Length: 329
Image (cartoon, rainbow, N blue to C red; front, side, top):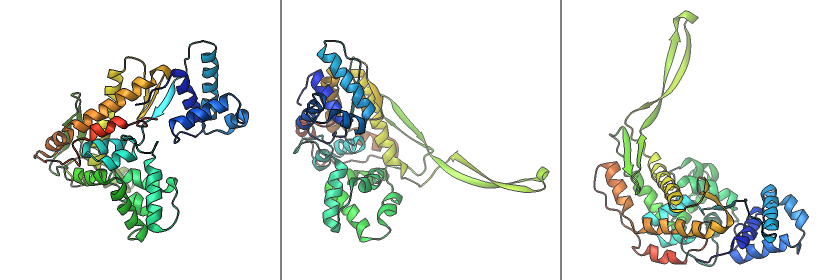
């Protein structure tokens, strides 16, 4: 994993603030330095950039660094599709891992850009990332409604959407369907243990409604809607519940291993610039450990009450992950 100085991370952060967060490290460094040193129109870019206020703060932090003053501005690094990263390591899928920067191939990857590019070839017309991202994200939480909303029901585009998913994220796609089978339709709750001993406990809730008549108001009626803890055959919450529980484990574990302050918003982490190398190192190490673990087997057994043997596409994914550069970037 390539490392940078605190000052270099400030320049990278400046480029991120200005909307260049999908570029490779060298390009971001070059852009950040060019903007700061007025090699390109600094004032206009700082006023119109993606995160103009954050960019202005980063510029002040760079000013302070050049003066030898301490920096109190955290830089933010977001995981590249953490849900898919989790599915990649659980399934041992190199193809999925490459799409989400757990394996380095040809620089910084964007899973949704890659999805849009491949599907565009299949359907013969240009599809934008903004169109592809919502149905792709929600598919891996077992949604069929959002893909149909975007591409229509029983259409060629919808068929090609599912074909593209299997092409770009084969292990993650198969695993999403497999996790649906973990659901225990006789259970009032599902429960499983994460590697740090935390127990995820998820009650099975269903929505009900009943008609209520009030005699004191001359027989006025209204519909009362409520949720209740009951058994259900509706298994779609299962993939999201499992993935999000592991997402939480990653954040907890990262905070334990890093002996410095971390601000986190889901899978986005903010630390002082001279701590980013350690943050990236520990994040990748946690995912390597997940890739080598039998966590999915354990969860399947605890949730379903049965022994379900899951099969990884490769048992050597953690070795391939040594090349990772942009897992959080």
